[in-house]
Image (cartoon, one colour):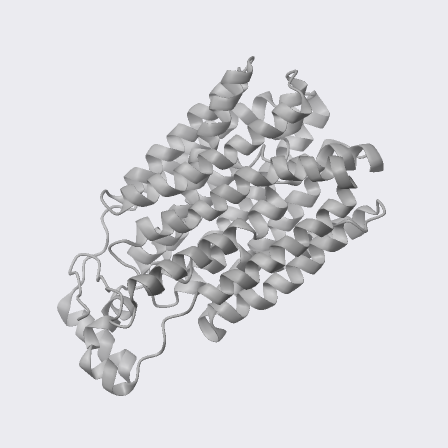
Length: 426
């Protein structure tokens, strides 16, 4: 029987959701994110950069534009993708997006050095890659989980962490064996196959019949009882913007930065992979903790760990310090990925979840546009990354303060709840 928590309007999985079904949904989301936009394109951007710089004779700022342009496309598209998921269903949107995304990634290997074509294709990758990222796959989980939403999200995000950890090293080997152009095409095929496998495992919560809804009217409480708060959504958006500007600003520059410090290409790729390992543990640990402690406090703790990582990377002179710094940065990125969907669910409810999550996620994507371009521009002018590494901790501290300012989860008012349910039924 579905139960409702007066603290957060909890919805338990419906009776037809067996443990096997729930496990398959989480596994499918993990596979989809492991081979989706973030690992296949974002995590490998820095590994492709040296080969692209050498062939096209571009500056680092120009190379970073591809990464930033894709995130710009993702930022603009995310709210619209969220609305489409609300209207047409998550699985349909992911399927169409996965096909176009894979084709666009394969076309990256056909580029001739035209900056306009490179930029345009990167935007397409971002727009259609949005639904193959956490925006698409994590939109499924709140339909099935409540009290264990954080843990389910954490397990699903293991896929993203594993993909981000493996992608740089695997890509480096593929480039060495097959050239960077063919590597893009190989990654595209793998991504499409992974998306199809993921879609075969996940499913959306089926619509209830009138009789079922009358029998279990409390199941609609969380979807309609929490009032929309523009201030809450704006705060979550700003947290995502500040945190991603800090944590993702050096993502496409990281291998080059480490090689400037004297590390070999192989060790630089290994350090970049360790960011993925940090993401892996950050996703799982933060998801586990958010089910037991107040999510903003958990998120703030991980963001402050990322601030420590940036300060350590500023002064990293050894391989060991670089590895620790990359791991701490990954923890912050991992926690942020878990945090957004959880905050939207807890503070705004399930009603229009896709739209609200899309708006929040666009802040995350927008930060990934501003940060890399600014860091690349600063390097081209001054020849180092000192200022970006100093600014990042300040942004992460500000994001942590905003997180804590969200306060307690909203309480349900019984009278207003009844009125909203009646309005929804009408």
